[in-house]
Image (cartoon, rainbow, N blue to C red; front, top):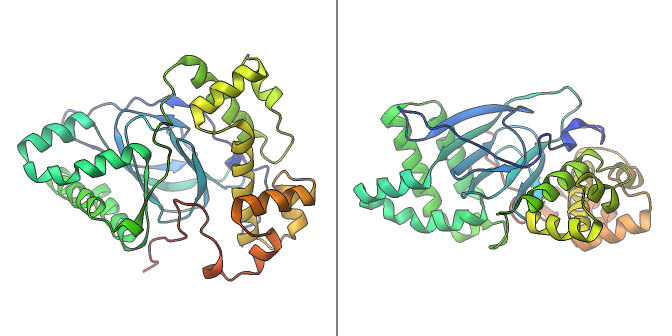
Length: 318
């Protein structure tokens, strides 16, 4: 049973939001890789390529555009071009999750050109459109996709492309109850430097101080902006207000503590940055639908889904 300290560096996003440059490979149509967490490749960022993503281990917080929630092993998602995203694991200081992520990335230009020569690929066009809001898969689709993603990682050449096409077909034909669109349609594409600066400074500050005293005035000062200006640009960059971002991340963290530790509800409140029990109960009820005490008494299969995109489902263990 985990007893990770709330001061863990896992609460930090590390590098601020940036445009990730994915170098093309002269002998490969797609980029396939695994990486550890934390690592230089991790961070709140965006890129023009589509990304299919599998979490193989650890639990933590997931951000896609304006949506925040939790993930667990078997979390399968597809991010469309330029949608900011990140997965932040709860780890003790100094701990590294080896090969936490399996990733497949490909450009819109490549898949559109391939469709011109392979008309069968037209059936994934709607999938590509849906992915611009971020897709998270569950149920049988998720665990079959996890197997196929790993098969893609461990293959090369034509065989690797075959696994990718199988994966796209699986996603394109997924039942409507086995995928969710997670970000608002308009959000996730800050185009001006001021919005990016506010998002970078604000989100890094929140996650560095999530369980302590988080103030909008401090975040604005770190972004070298007035509070009204910072608030406007932060919402443009992230899709939600500063206070809502803080609340969502704190409640997500509190739920994981309630699920995975024996700490009392009062201890969980304090460890999640809430030093007033009445306020903690009120915020938890508003976000989850029940009080923290009632939530803990429920059996696992009775608890509300961790977040819209997670659905509490993961790949089977065998």
